[in-house]
Length: 174
Image: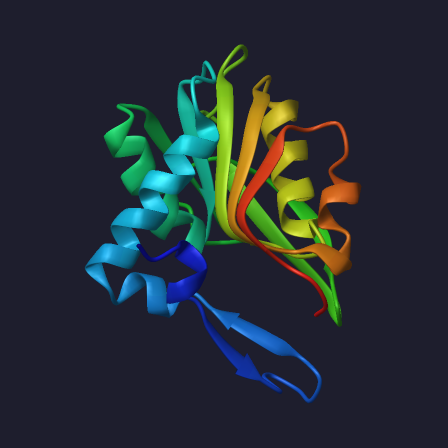
């Protein structure tokens, strides 16, 4: 029986020399890989009490929506600044070279909402940290954060210390 990591394609030296890029499109283009990954994300969530899945653009949408659907929960998208049509709140975060900003609809999370965040990857944790700040500022409670892959050496888990974090596949190195 195949495991999720069997569907992830490693591309050496992309986008620059020394980097081992973990390409999750191998999961998406195989029906068995996609089903297995969604099933594994749901197992990681387990019996946690929650009512909303939040996922960042764009791969958080890919993995978050089917989980929300299967578990009969709402899905809230977090998007790049300027992409959402109604009133939003936003949060800036640091990138390797510069800064980015994400936003969420102001009415998407209400006080007392219990939130599971789903994304494809945790590296440095900057995007998820920005999401947490927005969700908590709206009164939401983060009850679990799940990822398909984790780049352990980049320290994202440490940055998000205190939160219930799990990932399906862990990779050492960059």
